[in-house]
Amino acid sequence: MKSFKFNNRLRLISQLFFLFLTIWIGIEFFFYYNFLYTEGKTFYIPRPSGVEAFLPISSIMNLLYWVISGELSLVHPAGVFILISILIISLVFKKSFCSWVCPVGFVSESLGEYGKKIFGKNLKIIKFLDYPLRSLKYLLLMFFLYAIFSMSVNSLYSFLESPYNKIADIKMLLFFMNMSKFTAIVLIVLVIASIFIYNFWCRYLCPYGALLGIISYFSPFKIRRNKETCTDCKACTGICPSYILVHKLDVVKSDECMSCLKCSSVCPVSNTLEYKLIKSKINFDSKKLIFGILILYFGIIFFAMISGLWKSSVSDFEYMRHVKNLNSFIYSHPSGF
View (cartoon, rainbow, N blue to C red):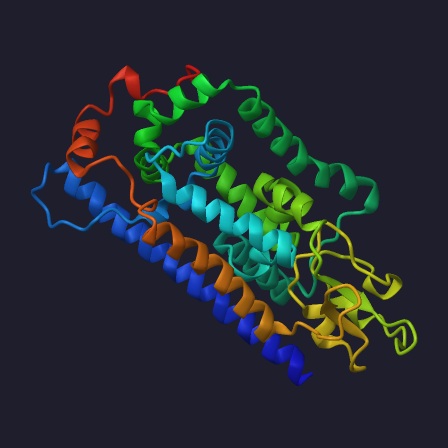
């Protein structure tokens, strides 16, 4: 039980750290936009490059362009390295990003915990509906990837260097600042659904999570069960937020496993459920896991910084010019939407 409480506390600290970091970046970016909007009449805060974490489509396109052409677009380079760090974390430690880092995942999880506290339990979608609903996030992922990978190198370059992409971060900020009635209704529906259904967004709709789930399938780290010492108490299955039947599996290979380590930390028998490599005797507990996540995440970002590939090539002056003419048709999406 001590291990379970420690694991939950450590994971909560990690989630809160990245949540506050995200909020801080958002506040900085708001003041930066305000500086641009007032044409320098308010105090200046440099544009936080971390805001590019919220431009996943642009980042995937830039990464693809980099792989094909050998050149990295410097319009939003930080987003590419944040994406790379997340992909590598998922390849090594499964979907641990979703349960230890992602602020959206933390909010979704917290809403589910709130619903459980108020109503006693969360609604569990029956298998008949659960499987097709879980496929929705993969369909969304396939839609985005098909649209991106069907583009030529020239088309990718044109998009990445377009006025629309150069201010995509500002477009995103204004989207939430000037939220439409439809967007507000969708967000309210998602919040309500997340209260009743645990991890509703993550389990059924998040295309980013779908991508990480596919990559995580090849992760060498997995939850492994010792059949000889297992008492079949089913505590692991009962605590799993992804409803995986852990007590029946020798190795948890599911793409829904988020490496939260709730199952291994709640197991009453030592050395029975462990998070480790194939044939390895070393169990990766929550301390080793979060250390590994932080090393990979911030290590890749640090590499981008010292390589001069972190800051956007779009100057403050150019940003200011774009903001001034934001209503021009050239800032519409290249597809016409």
